[in-house]
Length: 543
Image (cartoon, rainbow, N blue to C red; front, top):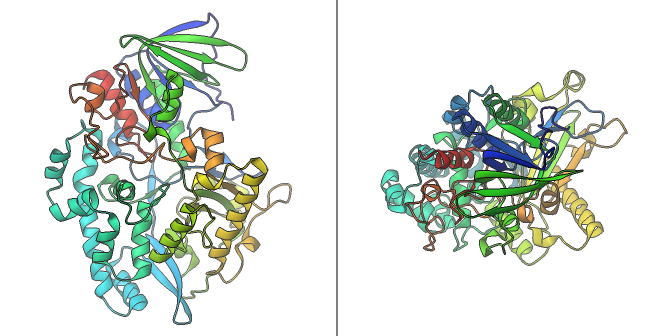
């Protein structure tokens, strides 16, 4: 839906001025706009689409159905409470009543592992699955380690970037440091845990949107894992009340209330700078114009930044996404083959499908060889069990529920053979992923799908090529590229920037003193956090 509050006055003279121009109206750009406008700077935000929000939006996905789904990003963990408080946002999250459920067929029977966070229930669940309490003890030790990392690292994300040794001292746990920052994550998983299913549940946090093996020497899986276990200082993943668009709508409102101008339908096409002032050229459906500013913040990927500067993207900017995102609306939740678990519990947390440790490695190897995984791994959750407010009155009365599926190990390299081939492959992947789910259901998921106003099943799938086309995510990569460790020299290859540069001090430097990254491609970027937007604003303000 077009933004009714967009500033359409731009372009009337062909030239405008601002203290800061922000390119891109995703959640990080909106965070930066709100902070800078509240500090008294003249802020102009240019957004290519006809609405703000980027990947953090809510939408009525299915024709004639009153249900607002978080169409792309869908859970919140990394958003600091300090940002919500600083900007006075009317935005809330709810904790999920269940952590996860992982179904499996063992010994000729359908069973699984339900993790609720209640010690007595979890201890019994692990013993029932594995036959002893040894695995639960290993689980507790492993997650005790990640909890210590969360408590000590998460507060640093909105502080000036520490050096590697400063962060290591702050962690103060050499075993935990080596396990996550120095050795492939698979080693720590295998040391602590013995059960294949339990190992897989842990490993999935390292593979969300990241194409890697548990033992990848690059440690990209470690960096992804770190960000998935430190959110909020606890690692908890929460449901945004009202859907993800509730956050970005609140951010846009806060930015406008502080005086920022937001111009949707205005696509930035180039940036020129001499290091002191910059000029951003933009175009709309019927005009072109320029804006002069002291600072430019880019809420887009490093690859898009290179395009705007007229430069060749650096090697690290050539990202590759690796996920399948599926949105569904159900008439009712399906029954499970594992009769010991209520579907309302199983789907309230993360429902793991084909995510055993060996299954994940097999799927990775098949995709790395250019083949679609025979058993696509995925994880699923039901937003409406925790927050039914995203359903309109009619679907709510009818007992409908949303279902979100996030598939792993679906790299962009599998696509690119033309629109028709990409569409066939998307359909094949969707069919294969739902077949893996059906293997644990007492009825096919297709029979539970609601129908839209035209009688079509309410299911939508998006692949990396779709995300690149719709959101300009490089290679469909949801983090704009491989995540970085949250310290100076973030990839451990000697590429630390000048610590005397304010932008480098906050992890948002681009090599140009008045052009900063404020999106997921910044150090400490990735996920729905607002952290890069906050940090870029702090760099501009000299904090």
